[in-house]
Length: 293
Image (cartoon, rainbow, N blue to C red):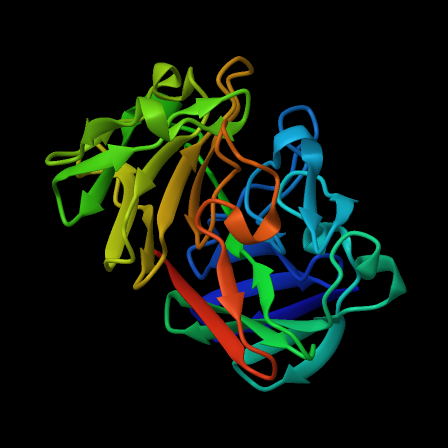
């Protein structure tokens, strides 16, 4: 089921499958969100839970038992229920059941809330530990945006800027796993052109260390006035990604509170790189904003 919210400046759509944002359209008529063309990538903005990225051998071990889990977890493929809706917000809920426990043994509730505030979509991801034990998990988001935003512009008319403008640690990927041993610096002290070669080694992953960051894609020339800013106050990483070999007309700006297994991971869930833990009965909140213009 698809739900629609509008405030006169923005109209969004949210699909109950995956609680996935599937449209962000401005009053100017521009569709900012990638429309999931399966020739390139058949998703819009999936929610990532209970892991971010890929597990080594697509499996992990917890409490002596092995579990299989695909890249980015299962939430993006599950049917959520409507939890609450107001004039300017919608909250979707996923609760653990017998199916999720074959992949992730904990009792949980995942709430995904979208709130409209002028030209901003505020996204809150809340994880609640309903279990009687500590829970280990990661959460994140994978929104993709149309680029170019006009038929008169081209992919390489755009650039990405980061605030604060500085050098960041870049985490390379090796066969979709984190290769921290090969960590490098990437320079965002000035805007970086969006070119295909930027993504030739897969996603560009910046280590944020939970500092507030704004990532903007916009035109290099000021007469193109439209763009997108994603803001996060405490994400551990942000991933920048587009398909390198297909000339895909989108770019992803992905706030992550976790990351793929390290190439040297031992497979134990509690040892997973950047894993979060949550005491019984407690909740965890991750939040980011999408602002369009």
